[in-house]
Length: 118
Length: 115
Image (tube, rainbow over all chains, first blue to last red; front, side, top):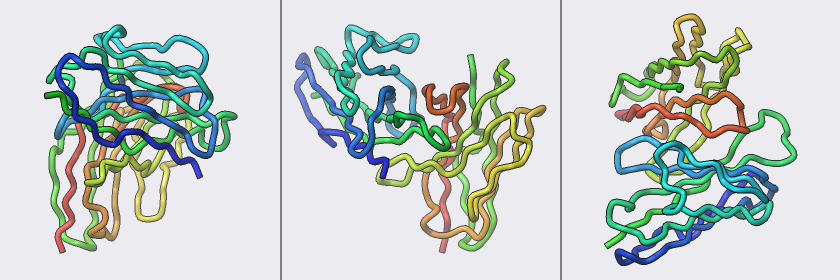
């Protein structure tokens, strides 16, 4: 149980195009999902918190018009990188918090999406 | 703002040995959560162990245990009887709200288990 998927696992796009990354909780509902960014050989940095039915909360320094987050259902959050540029190339990871909260109130991670912008 | 510091970029030990990864953090909060995550080459984040700050007893999960020193703001991970499959990046992480909050991660320690 508690499986989170991401699609696509790897995407290559041209500079200036937009790319959408999906994060799905497969066997549980999630009112809260989180998006992280991981540069090569570096740590994960929290980008934003996605709440079902409301606007996402972005961390300081993250451009909300650049990284559009939509949490339209209890099992799906999407991250759209708009007008992507090579510096947006990174590994994007989501995590999801099951609802209702049970046990250890753990968040579960997706396998990540590698974005390469040419 | 909270910060998490891992001062060991890389460690290497022989199989079956015990290894300790260090982590310190800084926060003004009194109640919070600390985590160790494992990221193998597949890059899938795996929760290794979790500690709630109000619990004095150190958390353990099979071969993994922590030494939580709240006053010193230290949270080290001990891996006993290390196995080849333990080779991975290990990240120490912190948050205030448990599952409700995003995580602040340290820079990670690359642990290599030698056969």
